[in-house]
Length: 186
Image (cartoon, helix red, strand yellow):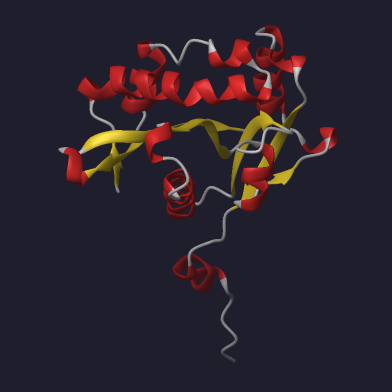
């Protein structure tokens, strides 16, 4: 898979990926989530304009997107708003590759961490993100921006199922770490 910025003409495809990926929520008793509408085209276009929308595209299938990730800046971190993989391409490490791409971007930009909110007990949510290095945040560690994200999720009814905020520190690139090390010349 090739990870690249999304093209404007592909935004409806991202919605199709989201709808397809959502169907698996029926299997865990969450049909309301399965039926939830994907992000609006305006939201996706805003993330594209901000340089915060990427796809994993299949070069063997005319470079068609099969997964996507959109992010935003929240509390000084890069916040994963949505990462979705079409079920036909699931369990191939594509979602993890998108997360690693975002982590690389964060490191290059000097952003200290990635954050996200997710369903705590859904296997491809909380447990999956924990395997990807995300740690669940205590309420006291949740910043005002992330708290606002959770309040909006509650307003939308997502709190009907246990949700958590998670954070993954981003290692500083070696070049930045070396530059920040004081000289010991005497």
